[in-house]
Length: 286
Image 1 (tube, rainbow, N blue to C red):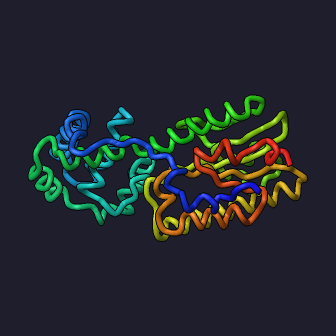
Image 2 (cartoon, rainbow, N blue to C red):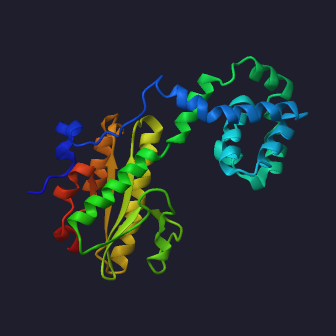
Image 3 (cartoon, helix red, strand yellow):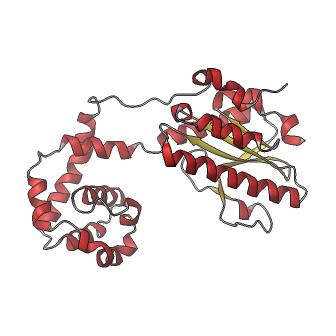
């Protein structure tokens, strides 16, 4: 009998893949070299800004995208920690952000005082910014290795999707009259014109509590949505969740994914190390 995802739980730590990371404080020299120019520009902008709103507007005028994003991150730490960072990145909404959230900005005099109280470069802040630098890298590494595994295992199948950074596949572009046109997926497996599987890949370094519940609950809803569409349109399309990382060992994560897989014979949950053993042509084609 084919093993289920749940059957691997007893030896779960042997079936996950650990991504490499940077050691502290080894990163500090490189971090300070990389972000010192950012802090220098931020210091100059503080001096030429009469208000914190003006500081934010000046940051948004920075033409170099990388520098603007880093300055925005520094701004959030010093001026507006409660404003979502993704919102602050939206250059076109700079005026609106100032109008809506400017009342909560720390006054520019206090910002300058706080900034001048720290050394330049500020090792602590540089280390924080360094964490942003590789955010998502582990997930990209996972999907790249996953594509290599799938291609070697199924050389005659077509595997589509962003292998590292790139736009997700929108299911509305591959399925006629799909109920949620902008539903994103990480990859699809095709044989000719037949879409055998829709896949989602995730590397979890850490996970717990409400985030854990939201992730697995959302995945269950997505899987049900895809399988319902497949059934209504007489398709054999399956759903694959490729999940990896130590976050799977925390809390109820392993059990939650087991329940998702056991809800349908057309769902498989695998780590990278399970792909060869658990994703087969026979299953994809049936």
